[in-house]
Length: 502
Image (cartoon, rainbow, N blue to C red; front, side, top):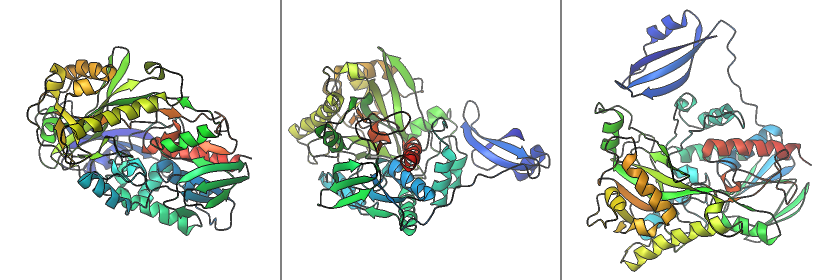
């Protein structure tokens, strides 16, 4: 096997004759595509070339019919839960998925109400429901590390269920919020067709029993039985932590990040990243940065080119923001979270819930400010222009924004906790992206659901919850992943552990 690279303009694919010439008569396979914008922006393709019979394509294990197999309860239908269920099919066990929210299409109506009227459905929103929080946040698949598992199993299945084959080679793959619902629905159809079960609007309220004989109670009074339980509840399921603590379970405070959502006109990001050479047909530009300030990381998070901002509250009386973009990334604005790392020692106390309580208090503060200042929509967000924020000035006029519930001019430099506001004010002026720091950029509060502020500790070998054998905490909600791919990999690992367990 040999490797070679080919560059070509962003407006076209590599020429076939050039690839064949470089391959030297060998079978060639594209393995990576990225944008190089250091000079004239170009696509860079990396290929591997194999002698006849040398290349072995990746093959997924087959899904088995598990209609009469032993059940395993999977709590949550986000990435960790879905891929745990798919792995159980491969291993010959029956996944029984309990999801507190609605199916991926029905939840859209509740999300629309949330944006239009500010009405929060605590069980069906941008965080809860089939597909999890990632189903409506661009479908970023940026994790490329294979330290915890083989990402090919995740990416190839996503392609089989409807995602573009581009995700197999793109350096920064994404699916798009417009295409993810179909992928998620196809995963469900596959699981059900092979004998698995889905139960929506089935909020778990109790876990009893022991390995081989668990009983899982839901809010509607039903009880489900299984040999093991995979907890894949997502980063916002606070009631699950409370349920575990109430039965004497061990929990740990875990670091997370909090800050603001930053919105720029996309053309400004395109101009900066492509050095003024962007033109129609060229992908919308992305950005990322990491800085250290006063002993803590300050970094961009979940960047959405050509995207929109959406309300992500899971309970009334709070304001939380997130970003999303469709597969074309063709919107007028770019947005990203810019957040500050917060560690357990930054919040006084010894409760496992102290960072979660801190998170909630800031979300409530954002809501209370807007409510006290005449917000028509309860999900209106406090906002401030970037330079004004850094200079400690109130913004007299708000620029255009994609945030549908609207914004209220606010002193975010005072509303945010000092440990966050002070670091952001120092970092924004020195971000190494041309014209990033200006008053065309709008900051909106608050970006707080970056990851779980609580960890459900598990045995590093068996992956079982340290306080309950046969229960496997996984994904973002348990504190062991961050994003779609890493959550899916963790779900796969927990499914394997559950299959091999007691």
